[in-house]
Image (tube, rainbow, N blue to C red; front, top):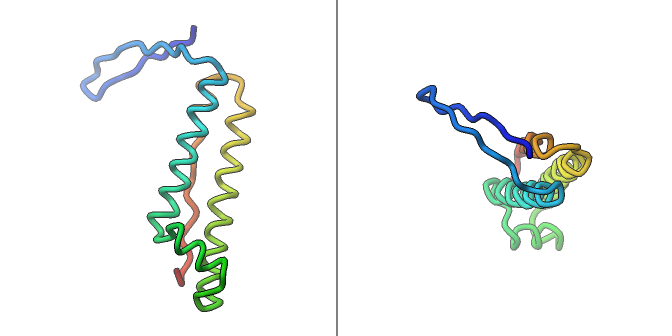
Length: 108
């Protein structure tokens, strides 16, 4: 059973025992990753209506391309992280994968 020593700001510590199976850890990390990807899109102002409007070409072409490009960048980052999580050999490795939000392009 893996355990980690967690240090608090006041220099006290406690031991955290990770009782998750590999599948549970993977699923938890992937769910967090999905939420981060969604939050990334929403914080850039790209909700589902905006995504649909861009896909339909309702906005000017430059804006449609900027939106589609940003969605693709977020999807690629999600897929990169998901692959790392699935390849992880331990729960700690899966937990350490970090989602790096793409830079929001001009023109959104």
